[in-house]
Image (cartoon, rainbow, N blue to C red; front, side):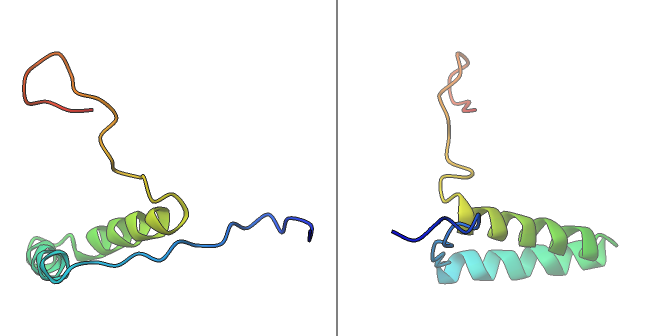
Length: 70
């Protein structure tokens, strides 16, 4: 067994065509609103997190109010 390197092997993340289309449209709207750079950085951060923690963004539990999830 080799010693740990401190860096986990990244997971493979595959985005559907619909997700890719929605992200492109989101970025277009963000650029129009003057928020292009911030939105791009947020998307990159989410993508990075999904590569090391694939459960990121999964619902944790349903809340007491019907239709709401944490």
